[in-house]
Length: 91
Image (cartoon, rainbow, N blue to C red; front, side, top):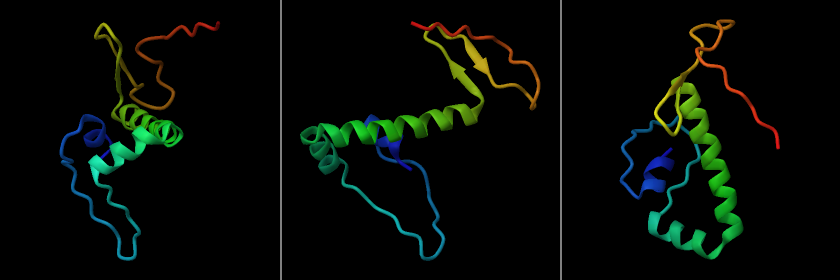
């Protein structure tokens, strides 16, 4: 939680309720940015985790936007054909 706020340097807006006994961490944003600036390997690893989580959230929302504004909506139900077909180029 809070990865978008962290990446955009904005306050987090989500409210999170944890189950009793849950373990959680709270990071000071400025301190974490300083640490990532000095530890490139950690920065890369954290970026990879955040990218995966953000991709899951976008995919879960059912809409992807490309650079020119076309949207690619998820099929309405399992087995329905996609609204757009994407061509994968291999290099």
